[in-house]
Image (cartoon, rainbow, N blue to C red):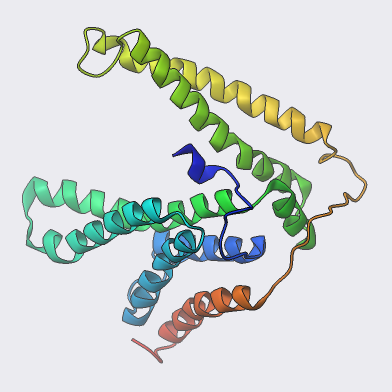
Length: 247
């Protein structure tokens, strides 16, 4: 799983500008997670279509296994939300309906975030933020996140290996210590990793007042336009729905 969050510029498939990926992320947060325009059928259909876009991008990057897992999971949960939940009653409706609602809204953004982290280098991201004149108070924490998640996943795997060596696992004789011995080291490591990455970012001059140069090249190309146009259509459908043009 850690490989999904590690930038691999050699095998990232369709090369998109970081600003394009960020635009898709924000759109999914507004419509899929936030539920904007949910009372308009055209917006709901458009949201579902845009939610499939991260899976297509994963396929272009050659991550077929992960795309299949995410795609099948999303399809099953979406199917349950449409066809299964309306027939449920009582506690089953509350539990299954809530889980379906949470996962259907969260998964598209999570998949797009995973793709963005795995296909964008820190230098490209900082260059994009600089082009948009985003303050460093926002750029630095977000750039630290690009290395935070892969490092935390590596630490999580190492802690899991250490627990197996000590026979501390679910169902083992030390099952009661599983949560304590896994979560406490992970929390301590997360705090240390965040501090170290922040110090490394500042050491590289991200906090300097002078304009930072960057040798990586970014820019909008045909593939960016092909992604931006259908994504931007959601906002148009939302506006048309609010004024009653579409339903």
